[in-house]
Image (cartoon, rainbow, N blue to C red; front, side, top):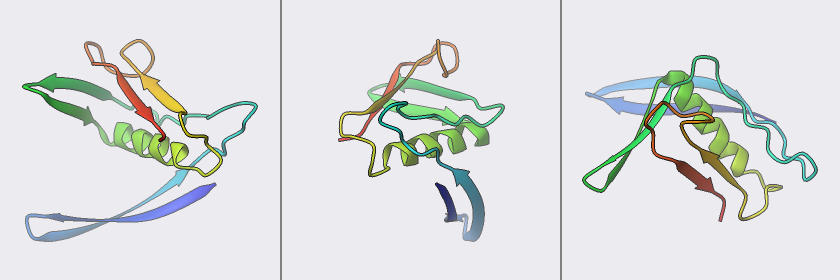
Amino acid sequence: MKIVQNIFVTFYNYLVIMKESLNIPDYSPNMGMALKWEDGYQIKVSSESGIISIEANKEGLISLANHFLNLAQDAVPTGMHIHLDEFNSLEEDSLELLIEKV
């Protein structure tokens, strides 16, 4: 499945149009979800004073967008989740991050 999305961002009274093409792997009940990671991604999850912070470079943000859209597919069942931590995808000292379809 290929999704092309125009993203409009207002930043200090400037309109920025970003066109990004994402390839979302089709969900397979037999194989599960295939996560697509952009080369060079960096993602860190932290918490301070009860505020959760997700910091990522461009490649990390695109990877996360791909994962969210992957979970959003109609074929993906409720309860399916992505579990990220510093041992499999996040930066050192990151908090664990669980993204679940409800």
